[in-house]
Image 1 (cartoon, one colour):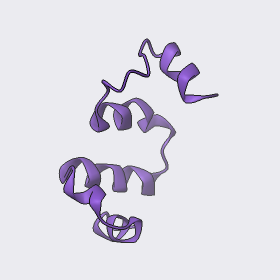
Image 2: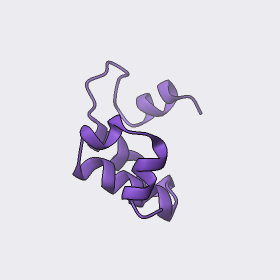
Image 3: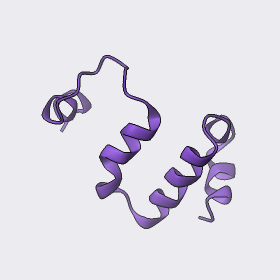
Image 4: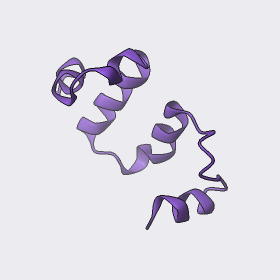
Length: 63
C-alpha cells in the first residue's frame, strides 16, 4: 500500500502537516520491538536524535 493510500485511509492528507510523533504513533502497531525502541529514542530527543547516523540512533535506542 502506498503512503498516499494509507494516509487517505487514516483520514489524513499528504500535506506535510503531520509531525514525526504522530506518524510514528500511527504506525506503531506495525513496528518491531527494536524499531519501537528507536522510535521512542527519536521522539525523546527530536529533532537532534535524527541528525546523526542511523547507527548512532540505534545505539542510543539500545538496539
